[in-house]
Image (cartoon, rainbow over all chains, first blue to last red):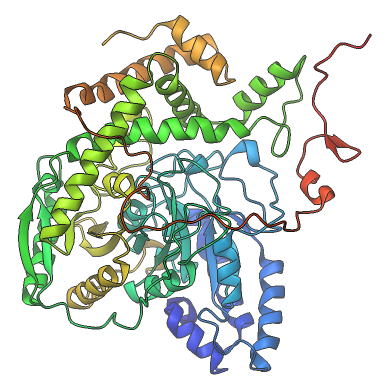
Length: 491
Length: 101
């Protein structure tokens, strides 16, 4: 592997601004890497090599004239999940219904990345409309876990996590509604952050469930993830759910010590259903944190057992409403068969949506339909309040919550496809953070006997990302996980 | 909780502008039913005097604001229509909804 592909984002940027290497060389290195290994894992739906090299050449001119010396991401090529719109670059949401959609505008996060000198390798595969926990709901193909090509990369941001794990990109953007950044990050052995709801603009993120969706970074290290967040975070007048709060400095204090922090272990996260291999790695990490001077306290989030049920109702209800826009009129695919307008809508949606998307639209329509609203949507929204109260109480006692990201190691491709409920339950430790709105992060904490990554999750209170990244950074350094060679990189 | 019927599923599909073949329905109904049984667990949670949370930014120190209602340039019409399956003279085209005289 070219040495450039092993560099951190921070290092790539340093080399570019100090003119040790050009943006064009970096881009070519990653394109070569994609060429060599992407046929194994298929992380990308779209790679725009010509556009990338053109953008890189333009950046190199700016760098030569000193124009981009303050760009936090000068010359850094990134991979973007295919549900974040990119001007002129196909954005399909891994769905047939948007197979030829070329957005006429950039998402706010894309504008922010461009402004700091980032360029884009392409768009990564995901579950269709970000609906899934394995990546298998992509309408095009299933991305494979780089550590074991027979297992899933996780989902829905599976392509982004797999691309970073395989060093096809130094960093990537994903999106979360119920764990879609943290879970694939855990399965692929990379760092993934779901920011506080409202910290990052959702303008240009194709909507799945608007009260839950958030864009977040995927990186090789906590430091790179913090660097990406620094660029992504901040107010946006085009998203009324985006907080007006000015983002904190996520990098300045990241190396400070973590002595005296109180770390809560929710007992509900360590019960039956957690893989013993994961638990064992977690216990080692907890011991390291004690060594760093953190105080470990057992806490309780009593409504955790209901989180998936609440999530299913709220997320699917919001999805059924959001996906009403795909009607074959303004964009996307239209069926060739249409005797009248109603049939045109119906056939277009039938042909354009995959099975899981239809299932969620149906469940969502059901729970919102007349006579059922109170029993399902209203009830779930009240239990959401109870979940939130659990979190508010627990964050009066501790600074962080720590536990597993996933109940199991990465599962086999095909293992859960015929059992949607089992698939939903794989998000059991992640969904609460989305329902409540707090930030959560997954970092690698070891590899199983079979060489599969194990993820550790940390959550913090609202807008406490700086503190969260500081603890994660300290733990990452203390754990010093040795990354094995990928199966296709073994010599 | 009651079982979901084929008729109910067809009715929901109609509301959602979807349609299922008999084979799809056969696969779909048990999965739908299983999720409904699962979410029925919320019936056992007491929510008396609990307010609903529709949005996590509603309370506390998470300020959101609306921007000033100022006119800003829109995308050009032809750019917007570029992704439309069918358009003419600056409009989206759909199958006829009114009969010709």
